[in-house]
Length: 253
Image (tube, rainbow, N blue to C red):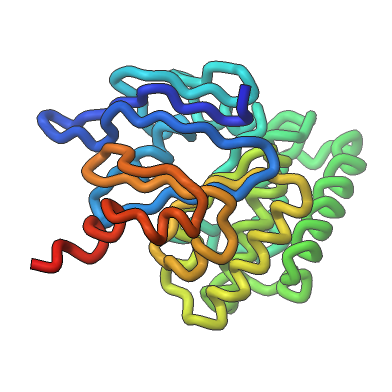
């Protein structure tokens, strides 16, 4: 079985079928993109996979384990992490502190022990700090470690968000529009970081509107329209798919 397998997934809101009988798989080690116009159901699909929403029917398997109905933190412990379109970092904290928070699901000390700063928690705290610094270094933002989040550029904050997601030690990382709000140079850097994350052994599923980025880094692409999958293929085939062209550009008439 694939690392991630979606089988006939459905989610409706009243009469609106946001995700309608969607099926596809993500093989280990690949970068797979989900594209489609606004309202196609892309973010809803991510929310279903990550446990932020429950499906009306269908199944989601991760590492051969059915994860339907599990809470997001339970899914994260299995090795599936995500980022959001709107950056969700903690202001008033440094970049390093934000990344260290991502390690909490891998720590052994309880909340109270950590809060009381008991001596037996100190070695683990040092390990958490060291691992957080490793991820900051991997993504090229280690110089931002002691900088408060609000003093960083939008592109740097994306890098910090990626580092925090990696701190959970995921096998699969869901990236929801990682290039949103970035300029052309920052988008190119995000593409480099995503490729670097894949090279570190993490499989990636991303939603993205920037087609240049998608075509440059993706191994396969799934296309959604009005909640339904209309295509799934290699990037160069998607570019030539008449139905995909029609959905994005409209009929010539």
